[in-house]
Each structure stands twice: as C-alpha cells, then as structure tokens.
Image (cartoon, rainbow, N blue to C red; front, side):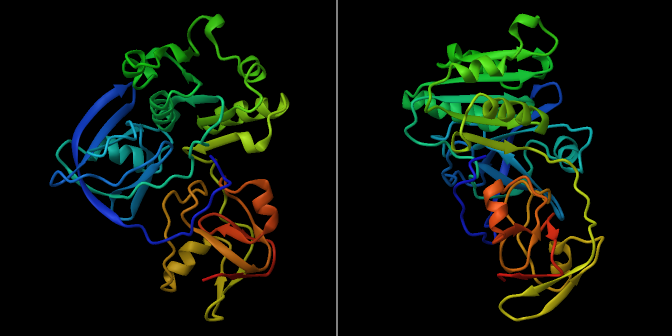
Length: 329
C-alpha cells in the first residue's frame, strides 16, 4: 500500500447498485459485476482502488476493483470464501445473488500506482490478484514496462486465469503454483535483484506472502519509497491493553475506554460516530488526529515513520500508552 498519500476521513457517500452478474472464477472465489440501477455512469476509479460493500445491517467489507479503470459502466469485485471469515465472505457467497440491489461506497484508493516510473513489479498472492490485475490493465494500456507474478496453491485457485492468458499483456505474467514443478516456483530474490534501480514494487495478498516479498526487497536493497503493499486481512489483534481516557479536542469531554472495548465502539455509544470499514486497522477509514498523548499503534496501515510522529491513529484497533489521549474531534 502506498502510505505516502493521505486524505481526510469523511462520512462515506453510499450508492445503490445492482449485482448484474455473479460468476465462479476459481475454487472458492466468486466475482460480482455491479452496475447502476438506471444505466448511469459510475464514479471513476484508478488502479488499486477499492469500495466498501454493505452486506447486511452493520456488516461492511472492502473489496478491490479488478476491472479495467477505463470502464465507467460497472465495477467488478471478487470475494474469496475465507474459512476464518468474520462473516463477510460467507455472507457474500451465500446471500448476495445476481439481481440483488446492494449499497456500496464510492471508490477510494489507498494503494495507487506511482506515475512515470521506468518499471513496475506486480506480485499477487491468491485473492490479492484483484488490485494487481487492475494495475496490469492500466500499465499495459499506457504502454509502460511491468511484469506480474501471480502465486496460488494450484491452478484451480487462480481467479481470472483465462482473462489474463487472453490479455494483451499475457507475455508479462508468470504463474507460480505451490503444487507444481519446483522450477516454476516464485524466486523473489532473483526477480528483485535484476529489477531496474528505479523500479517500484506492488504486492497484495495474505500477510505472510506480503512479508516474504517486502522482507526480500529490503534485504536486496530496495528503499521503502519504492515498496507499496495492500492487505486483505490482518492478524487478529487483542482489544485489551488496559483502560485509558480519551478527550474530545473540540469539547473537552473526557471518555473512559475500558480494557475490553475499542475506542471507536465506546465513542459510538456516546453518540460520536467515526466512519469505519475494515475494523482491522487496514484501510485507514477511521484515521484520526491526535493532539496530545501517546497512541499504542496496532494497525497495518501507518508506516513506521508515521507511527513515530504520534499525530494520528486508527481508532478501530489502536489504544493508548499514555493515561489520556486528546483526539482531534
């Protein structure tokens, strides 16, 4: 995820769309084509963008857009049925059907392509193909230099494989399957070592896959400014960590946060609604300014440098190292 660009958090604008198609793309993966109800153009988006999808009352999940960015008549997302699901993927697979009308947010991009770079290396692990495929479409359309590596357990789990093989950039894509010949396995060190010195890296997938690619890039000398990642899930984080107080900067109101509740949930009980989406510290929707105090950062969104500044935090998962936090609310 490119963490150098930030926008202010605002209450999301919701759109009603119809599920015009639902297709099985790979083992455990369905794609959903979303179109406007009356044929209007949908808001534009850029490669790496995602939308929030309201699956049910109080259940909102994020999914990357994987169709070509030039398309304005539809959005396409894909959902992996996750055995460790917190309810989102199960609901999408079992409840959301072709013809249904659902609510989504306008596209948001926390994982954008860096313009005008000599080479882009795209790494996708499993369902992480969704934003990476969109990036490949755009780079190919622009005539830019890139290569893509797509890793799955087996060919049956490779979503959009036919679309990729029939694309105009198929010769720039390599598939890597865990259950296939050793010679076709991903060798990230050799790929990253031979890359252009000004190339940029984009990786999306399970956290272990992302860690492998990023740790390898750092080891062979890649700078942080050229490394971009996006998470689809984060490791489960404990809510506990001791009680502390949150003070509202605009009013001075002091609110106690108990050990077993998140800041955002307690604020909601007090009538202070903070926009949230992933609730895992991934998306940045609940990013809030900190005026005083020291946060205990537990997210996967902020960079190390951003955490050290202690001027912003994610309220869905992070807590406090100090006895009190003053929030810019």
